[in-house]
Image (cartoon, rainbow, N blue to C red; front, side, top):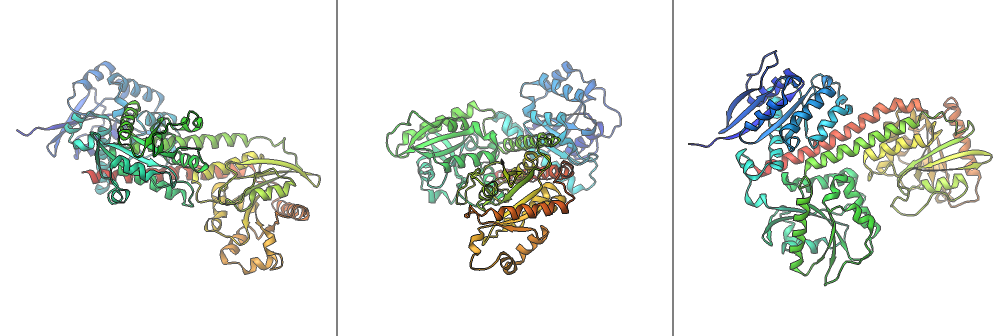
Length: 633
């Protein structure tokens, strides 16, 4: 007799019609079509591919008796999952509290076995994302959620959604069930995969990652590059070691860096990563090392911290010095150890260390779900920060007198923003440094009296850089208006003569996307390194000889521009001329600044853009996740 594996799917929620739709979708036939809530728990079974699927239909949330529900759930044999089917418009605090009580009564791990399903058929787009009741449920379920259109008529789309639902259920069981339960659910994995430790080596270029890779696997890095997913049996364990390319010290766009990180995570499959190992040579920590760790945590979110281990490499029997950077160890919650790349015994100690770390962490690995949760938490925090900044914008502006001139400097890293700020203020206030690395890492404000008038200058990080994520740009843009409350008189877009990058071509677009179309009327181009033109041509001739992209940018800014020679500290006339041009622009704009009202008009666009970023990242994570799952089947 063929044994039949079982899977129990329990439907809980605040909408009868939505629960019916989900149940019918799972069973692949319209067996649930009643318009009346069931008074008792009902079950519907369907045999699928030699597996028995049981869909458990529950009454209205407020009618469910907690003790009876708990007793019934405990009678179910085989793996079980809870699908929390939520209609956002009608979901109340009472619904949320009752769901929590029901799940907690079943098991302390019930939320680990739960997936939130959200109806999008009637919801205004994104409304549920700002509802703390919905968000709390999603967070309780480790950020597992799926949007579903209960009114979808397209059969092909319904089948795809059903497949996606079972893929998510399958992964959830793999992450939370015991190995025997995984097999009962038809989700058998090989012994090799069950016991495999997935390690990801991180670090800057030249950080001895290849030596560590070869020490652990016993094979050359050239051989390993042919099959980065290959499992190796080391010290009685199956081990997979991936090498993440250097994240710092490059001009790669942030989205490309994110793609590398996602690819690396997807190669580890549903089991995820047990440890991210930051490889550092023994000695002083460099700025590049710190940058590597920061980018790693920016890409994977702060959720990666408990899984991050510092590995100091040596080629002899040395010990780690007593004084280790405390900030480094605080950022790497997984601890630190030393590895003699020539000693095989220490490889065993490293693997023991990772196994202990995995047992201590909950969940025991960093998965795509962990990443989604971290990304959503991080961006939600940024949204709250923008909301707080918005509140600051309600300041009446009494601190800034009517005669105060407020200037916001924007542009790509290394274009001369900080130097221009110092030139305007007549003293060195903002730190400057030649090169491609940004000295200004967040908005910095300073003021001075210029020709008897108070002038406030805001220096911003490289907001036009492709190395900044879009949400970081939006957050710093919002700070810009807040710090110059009640608003800046001018956005000075700083460009360096002789250099006009692809990012700078899109500069005005970035400003308009963040602040709305009105911001264009308050934008002026400031060229730096005007001394490069001396004896060659005038600024007007330079513009005339420039390409069409620069001319279009100038046109978008109303052909308002000025040129600075920041090396000539005694030339005060260039500052006076700039202020004169700004005053003329202010008069053309009705005598006012870029105001709170204008920013509020742009706020909806900012929120939509933040949501688009979330959606885009989650789609890419899901795609990588599904690709890795398919490769394992």
